[in-house]
Every structure is written in C-alpha cells, then in structure tokens.
Length: 46
Image 1 (cartoon, rainbow, N blue to C red):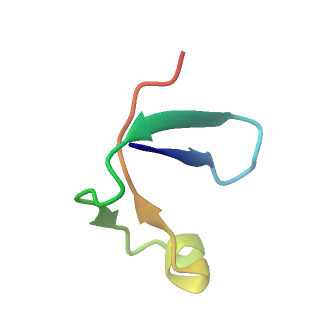
Image 2: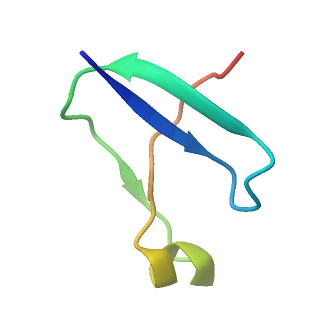
C-alpha cells in the first residue's frame, strides 16, 4: 500500500488515499487533463 495524493483542478480540494501501487485509472479528454497528462482515480476524501 502506498499513499496516492490528488485533488481538483483548481487545487482548492486536496486529499490522499492509501491504496495498492497499481490501480485502474481513467483518462479524461478535457483540455486541462490532456495538457497535463492527468489520470483519474475516484476516491472518497473525508
């Protein structure tokens, strides 16, 4: 298990989740995600 960190595009919301090193992620085709190579992992941050 490792810590994955992330948040929203604007940076206002940040979170971290402990999960296996290799996870299924999703590609987004919006201009921001494509430009920066962002990949999405859906997690509930509390």
